[in-house]
Amino acid sequence: MNRTRRPLRIAAAVELASLVVLLGNLATAHLPAVSSLAGPVHGCAYLFTVIAAIRDPQRTPAAAGLAWLPGIGGLLALRYLDRAPQRADQVRAG
Picture (cartoon, one colour):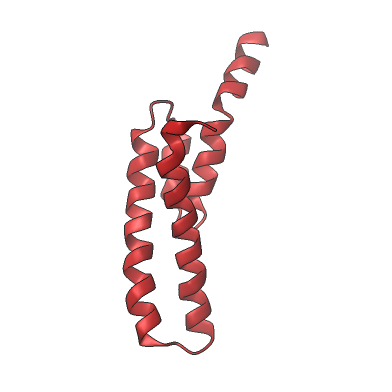
């Protein structure tokens, strides 16, 4: 695991989990207390995920663009960034 991406990994997981909580709350009881807690958590995690992906030293335009997708974008950007060295090796070999 790349230690420089640990904050991005945590923020992406929090972003997805908070979105699941928000959507679950919307589909069931729709409690205002849950929305008032999970909403700002999701928003902060989303912004942190986008900024962390953009600040990654190995970022590409595709990885930065993926981070802008709400909910799953941070995890997709992480996957893309983790596979970047493999893609670079394939380009050099091929």
